Length: 218
Image (cartoon, rainbow, N blue to C red; front, side, top):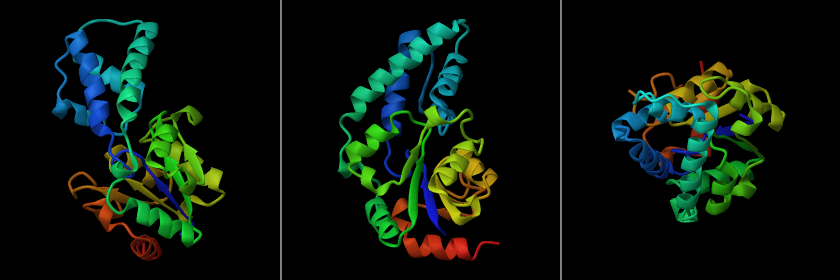
């Protein structure tokens, strides 16, 4: 194991509630019946794909320009909300894991579907741990396509087979597996069926666990 590539939401921190509230505000304005159950469909997909899923709840037709305006409107609201993020919002065990990886000389990258990822890392005060941040502005295909994880490996200068990817969404696990990396899923066995290793919480993630699991992979 030479590198670990992390997803952001649900792995490093959890801004999912802010995403939900921002989308909910937009959906309410458009008169669309958007709720938390439907919001699960948005996990791990891009902003424009998320918008398309929400607009599918109604019958109205929108031009591409109108769709971009709606996506921007949601993002502006979300950006206001994430200004509240602090280091206290790091998920359990993540800071100690980042420290362990850094001290062991393991490279670290972020593979996030969020254009706001660099801002969030700054708010969490963990930017110095990351050797590279790949976000959707640098790729053509979002998850479950492997491009974002392959780009991370390329930017770090390591082979995909020497990488561990950590995700909490099914689309993300597919992306990691398709990239030829070892996939670690944070969640339940039902959610993470395709993961090579499943942990219920980020607090279970340690350098030793990742190294030994990667070394013993089938």
